Length: 227
Length: 160
Picture 1 (cartoon, rainbow over the protein chains, first blue to last red):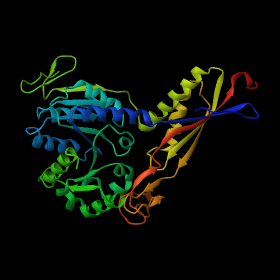
Picture 2: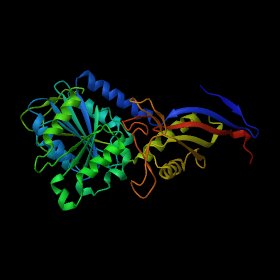
Picture 3: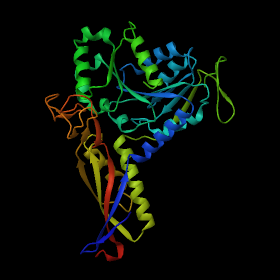
Picture 4: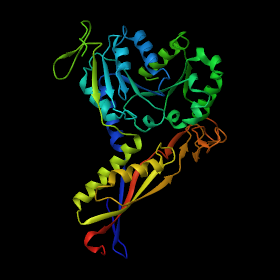
């Protein structure tokens, strides 16, 4: 509805309710519909560069690929190192190079979905760009969002980037084998996350020792089963 | 280009097989998220000026939610940069902050969120913890970023 209102000095105002986030949100919904139709659960991984997203995804692919169809969408600003590393697992990998862009958006993920055959897939891991700010604003159509933080990022990661956690369902605190060396308290990071969002699932992991990986795998399967 | 591996494989819609372990690459143009938002904004406004060439936009009112990730200064910077060579050049961006409102499914609280004071030495952080019963709330307001209204002059009515 448009209302025109004349102003004394011939300046006019138009009410124009137009959401700037809607275009992406709409595409995210379309992605979700396509995924749901094929019975695929997409999970979006967000976190800083070096937090361990790629290694964590690789570990989960290793565990799941023989039981269910897994594919990985790998967002990376310029390089294909991560995509190549995951491709060694012999699963379909779509690399989405954002060329210095700071986040994936639903349009890029939708393009990826159109590039691959979805028939035999059950799970798609979407690795977002290593960035704790921008991706939060752009849903992709995933069923759950995972934020990966590692103890090597210091004790204040959660407090410095609260928005990222508000929109997530699972938080992984990674590299806990290094917590002592870093003098960072895993419990304090957990408490910080729960202070922001009381019902969020927090899992402490180490891809080196394998700690927490069973629990993380279970959490991903629970998302896939709609729990 | 690496050779496709022999085992496994998935069919592409265009008909040929993309083997498992073979990487498909998709590229996009550079943008930071305020730039994405500003681009969407400018696109919408230029659509208006294209359809109404006699009108000149002088002011744009935006509503930006407290819980959105949008940095006002960066958004202004991007807006000015993109509009520089367009009919929108020189138009003012008015940004209204929208307060966050949360609702609690456990105790039916509805209102401002609980803030975490002293989390860092800066400003308090809005949380999703219910101020009333400490369970998890959901945000109903404060995540938006929308054009509320635009102000324009008729080109032939502008003096000078």
